[in-house]
Amino acid sequence: MDDRRAGALCVLSAALLWSTAGLFMGLLAELDAWTILFWRSLFGAFMATALYFPGAGRRRGAAVSMKWWWIAVAASAVGMVAFIPALRLTSVANVAMIHAALPVFAALASILILGETPSRATVLLSCVALAGALVILSGSPAGSSDRAGDLLALLMTMSIALMTVALRLRGGSNLSMVAASNAIAAGVAYCLSPDIAVDVAQTGLLAAFGLIQMVFGLLLYGKGAQLLASAETALLSLAEVPLSPLWVWLAFSQQPTPPGMVGGLIILAAAAAHGVLHLRRSSAESLRLRQSSEGPS
Image (cartoon, rainbow, N blue to C red; front, side):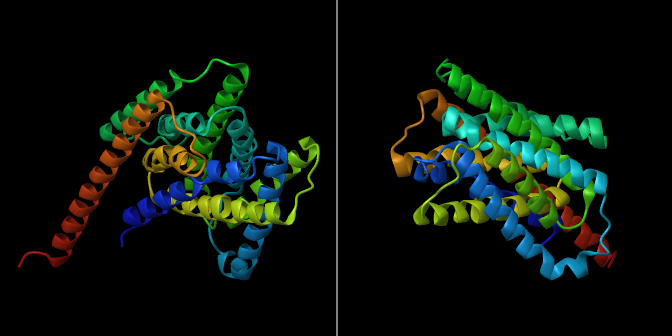
């Protein structure tokens, strides 16, 4: 499997895992956002650390930019701190759809920081995805808590865009970044949580939340971000957008609004179109490489 296909598979897998956040939040409905963030991040930090140390010696020689490591850590931590409260203040669908602006922010960050020039198809499909998000927001309630949640979701999206670019520049393993950002988020949540006490069942759910949705999701996304252009990584991650409200609807009968359904379909179409173009481009490149290696007969 070539790097582009491997990167696409990693990002799509991360999107699938990330889409379960609303499901976990529903199962932990009796806990406040800061308590959830504390335990989720604490478990995430411990699990990422446990995975990091067995291979630390082999990774020591890898080229790593510490400046961009710290930027990735900070951006990831800010995204975590904004994400969980956003899911409490506004709907899962709204958070997911605002996340659809990620390709636009990632493309802008790539232009400003990396000097990358996204393909016309990526720019066009990113705009289509953003239009879908605007359709969804047009149907959201105008209550203050919803607006606060929407703004936190926007902050989370911008943070992930910066993290996406930083991960391309830093090189090396992402485990240390995942561990450090989770530790920072856990510290912030501990200071803001009124009570961190949880029962045994909640502890199991929080551990699964930290491992499945956070650690594995971030590791897969980080690997994909190192193999693909930033705008392409962000666009493929939009597979999360229609899946997040789908799981909540199936589990808790929380139906998205009609604008939410229409906007979700628009975003899903943009992500699917990008996937098709990506596969065609990869196939064409593989064919050219095979023909050039064979040489004239």
